[in-house]
Amino acid sequence: MGSEYERQRLKNIEENNRLLEQLGLGEASKEVFGKRSHDSDDAKPRQQKQQKQQPAKKRVKREEDADKAVAADPPRRSSRRVPTTEEDKKASREQLETELEREAQRKDEKRRIEHETRRNDMPILELLKRDPVEYIHSKKCGESVKKEEKAKKEDDEDEDDEEDDDENDELIAKELSGYLASRPAIPRPIHSVEDEKDTNSSDSVHKYKERANSLVFKTIQKVTSNRIHSMQYHPDKESDLVFAGDKYGQLGILKYDADKDTAQIWRLQPHVIGSPISCIRFDASDSRKAFTTSYDCTIRQLDFESGLSTQLFRSNDGYEQETNRLITHLDIPHQTPSLLHAADNGGGLSLKDMRESRDRGVRYVLSKNKLGSVSINPSNEQQVCVASNDHAVRIFDMRMVKKHCNTLEPITEDEDDLPYYDNREEIGMLHRTIHGKAVTSAYYSPTGSNILSTSFDNTVKVFDDKLNVVNSIKHNNETGRWLSVFRMQWINPAPWTGVPTSFITPSMKRSLEMWTMGDRAPSADLVDTENITAVPAVVSAKPFTGLDDLSIAGGNGSGKVVLFM
Image 1: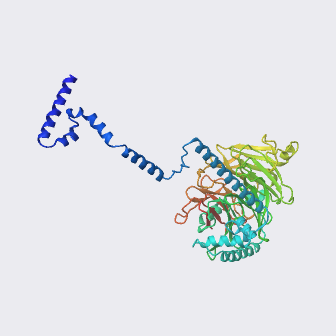
Image 2: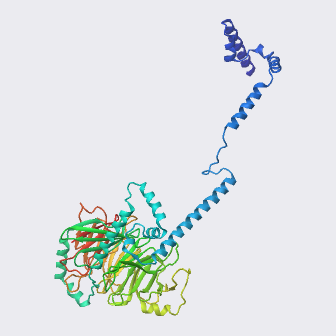
Image 3: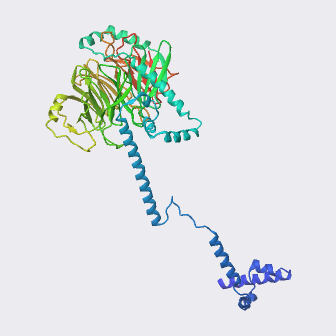
């Protein structure tokens, strides 16, 4: 069948070729239909004859052209992004390792210089700089460095002249120093149990609720550059003074004059850039001393009189970025205002007596998880309440803890770290209660009779001093990633002013809530939809006030502080 088909195909080709030759299209037939059958006989002799007549000039020329083309092409650079050979891959790995090692060394050196510089006292003028350490070292390096920096800044039209900035900062530093130095020393208010019984009467609670609902929005100001992590209302009588710490170690100070409706803001950089200020406290006996703690493992004091920021304590003398000594909270007993109690993310509680400058302090590990807060009983400074990520609120008797730890050998994990005593067996623990999830804070009330806790299990609980539940409130505490965690705060009024035991809470509804101990719903919900567009996650009430001058502050994720009065 195949042979018949082939014969028919050849026959058709022959007929077509003859037809094309008759039409004078013979050469075209060869291109379209291929060679004719009779051309195949003399194909080889013709090719041999052509080979004899034509020497291999074209082939040589082609080879020469190819050689020229190769010579004309430049050598191609091997891809660094995609190594092709094993040698390239090895070289790429080595280069990457070298670059990473250099970058790590550069960061370590920068952290070392940062911490070494901040060991010294820093005046307000230096703290006003965006990067105080860079400013300090640029002064030491001489005029050549200044000229180089000035030349670089001239390329940027947005940068102001350096000399003008220095003069402006000097004026601001002088103004802030003078204002802070003029503030009177106000001690922390001390309350008694008898006072609490009188102020918690039904009549006092009723008046408090009326006053709480009469508070109105006063102002909202951009106090820090970034999200507020901590905040404390100063007890100043003449003006409203709020201190706020943000996630990059900046301390913002807001001075607000309610009568004139004017605000003034100062921004300082007392801590390492990038290390959040976790807590702000004023001296229990002198409000002209502000203490700040940070994730740079330090506690610093800003003295209003001298205008100096001093490093008081450092939990880790190494320069590692990752450590379990990040200071999360601070409290100071009014009976011994020189004794600092600092909680950290490694479950440790560090005690530092400021009168002993050479003593590094002592650290007790009370939990295997992070301590979110520490609070000292105002009526008994030996009783300390801590909140932990292991869902627990614990009360320790520090006398028993110290007595037990004196029988132990201190543990040193790193030569740069403060040695600690392991008390995870909970020796000296008086009481404990468990929440459903991590506890962010647990604070004693102004009299020490109650404890207010906040947890991620969406509850706010009020306990007595033995951690028996007095009131449990359902409250949305799921702040998520972009908000600072909620920590409900007691109101600490002046004694005998008729203000009942009460506290304030932030709300995911973008409002501030005011409560009394027995409330199942807020006594007042402070909201202003036109001016407050973000959740004021950090709250503080002005201390040493009565019902007439009650003031509430809230700080949000963009660095703004809102005031209700």
